[in-house]
Image 1 (cartoon, rainbow, N blue to C red):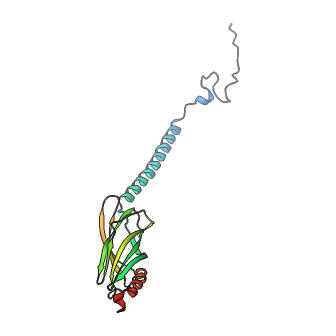
Image 2 (cartoon, rainbow, N blue to C red; image 1 turned 180 degrees about the vertical axis):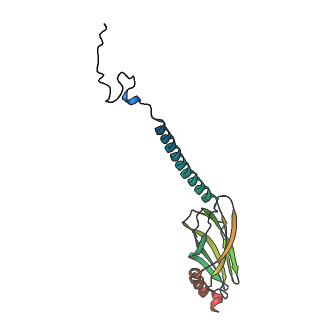
Image 3 (tube, rainbow, N blue to C red; image 1 turned 90 degrees about the horizontal axis):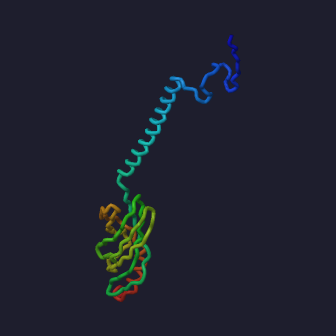
Length: 192
């Protein structure tokens, strides 16, 4: 007669089969759990991929849009100068503003109206978006023809991708005319 000895497995949880080699942390997940895990992982991947593609397309569209070039100018300070024979010559400055979205290299080209000539001094000005700078110019004015009307000034603008454009727009130059009037009134030909 064989004697069987019973034993109690203290590592086994209640309800599990006695003598099983499976520990509690090594349970094999059910097929349903595996399927849910795979579906969840797939859905997360699709969502993250969609967000990534949307961001990439948005960045590409922003790069594809042409940069905005917007430059404005106004008469700056005028100094020195001479007045003789009914003419006045004044050194002045144009204040130039980059109101666009890209850096630009600005060069004043010139202006000519009846009795007024504005020449550049060969100076170029690099302006980042939102910045302001000054370009030196030389005014030559016939005292009998000068008036404080806006003067159409011509500029050349170059963008970082080497595209160059020339444009003309009227600039209020009354600040320069104060100095010009003073020189014209002091000129011997203006008084006689």
